[in-house]
View 1 (cartoon, helix red, strand yellow):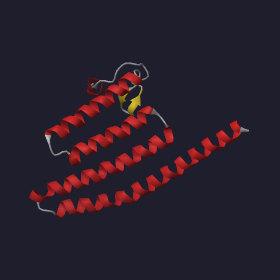
View 2: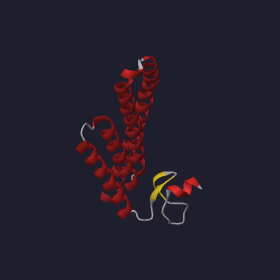
View 3: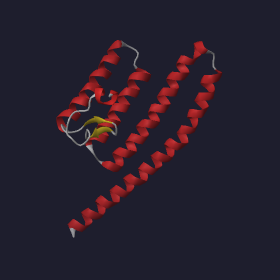
View 4: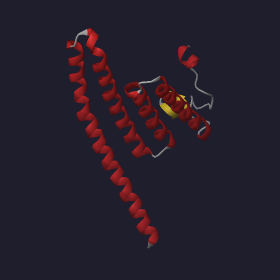
Length: 150
């Protein structure tokens, strides 16, 4: 009886996660409409005043990307999807809110730590064309930038 109840609870939680993921996707779709408004504002703003507007645009875009990665994390339940969300969140924080070199240094250390964690806990997985956590051509060899250049 306990085993059956546990299975129903787990299934219910998974369904709730999927529903929340759908809400997040809907929110990202609604939020992406603002990107077109930003394009218009960037085009109409004088060149010397576009820096802060472009920074806001990048922040909004990366926030939408983080939302999509969060959906993947909710549905897949893999360690690599969690690392991807953290990578995008750290990159957004560095681009938008870093004001000192120490902030940038901490962001770089954080991203390096995330790559190290990925390498340690998923040694056969690397960053490939499909994103973080994909096998490199199924051979187990590491993905290298030179492979794309050839």
